[in-house]
Image 1 (cartoon, rainbow over the protein chains, first blue to last red):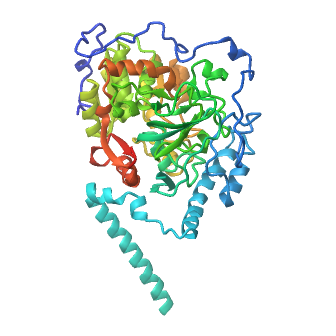
Image 2: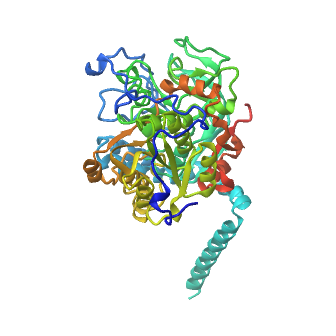
Image 3: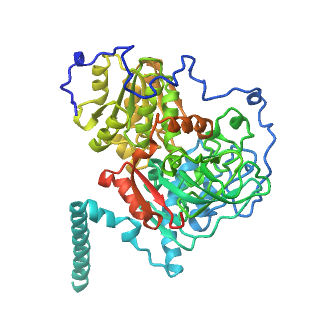
Length: 173
Length: 383
């Protein structure tokens, strides 16, 4: 790789160079590509507001949280993982605020972290003990990054051993 | 059925007892997944950086499959069709879809007016399950899904659902004129495709900046571009100025997004403390490396919370910023032609094919960049 020792004169922009070795060079070039073309295909409808013929409404069969910035639920939506528990209460609170407010996003970040803990209890409640080794993908860490795996395991083991030692010593005292 | 199950940051697994998707709307289809990918933006979910990513969700917005059931209103696709499904869920009727802004559909996401609907990308993107599963519900089946041509390799097809059009649109939004110097920040799959696509718009020089030598070596070969590792540069912005006649690049592309490395403060604020919508280091470098009057194109994903950017420099330099989720449906016909004509070879980016059952390993390998990973494809047992 070339580093900072490269001198400016080593490089010079030369327009009109020969790019024949690059298959497809320039086939899509478009001098008219201004900042809104062609990403936005302008129509008259864009100035008419919320007037399009809406698709049929998907039935609402679970609790769906809706942004306060829109008047309705869109015609289709995802109905997975409806809000529940403490994380759900936080999500409901968050959706009282607009998308431009921290009040909207910070409770959601907190709800996500609480949801993780709720997920562990849900697993245990269903008789499922999470296989953290597989969920974290540590087989590949062992296979491709063994040195780091051993180091991290040793540090974790030492920390646990230290904590146990500290705890048992305090008890004896 | 078997499907990926998110259990919290850095914890995913494949469960066999996940419920089969059902037709929820007359325009729905159920697709049996043949291939799905782990996208770099899935890692933002995996790392816990996207708000409202609920435990129990199934990720996956890059997938292809066979239609096994359709709703009563579906007319353009039928049971048995093998389709590639754009990651955007789009109605085709709203004011934004009619402007071909399929990434900004207003009839697919109750939770956010900023983001459109995206498969398997948190409730901030509509709360849909994704394609890292054996089966998936696909709304608006007459709009997005596109039949895979008989001649097309499924590995190419699955990359046309996001990576290829997103990289292409990154270059397209750059408004590249013949002979322009284009700098792409990020040598992940999107950056690789952006570099490749920049030539198609007539770029005179294409430069890619990243910190992983193996990815730089790949993109150097794949996209025939110049590559530099920013870890070897004292200051990437000064370096780019030096190699562009001290004026800067005509176009800079941010193909990294919220998990950019290279600046301790941004990493702490954006990735560790979640105090802003991600680490904006690549965007900083793009804004500061582009020429006065130049264009910065952003396809890197950021969170919805505010993020620090040098906006004063944007004003003072007269920069145009263009950004969007790719409009996959708009670009698919052209991308299919480019694959057919051998202009692009998407499947060359695939480095890992992993059974869906081992999804935890797939995410870990991609997240930690182990085994020179560039692109991971998940294959369901029933595919």
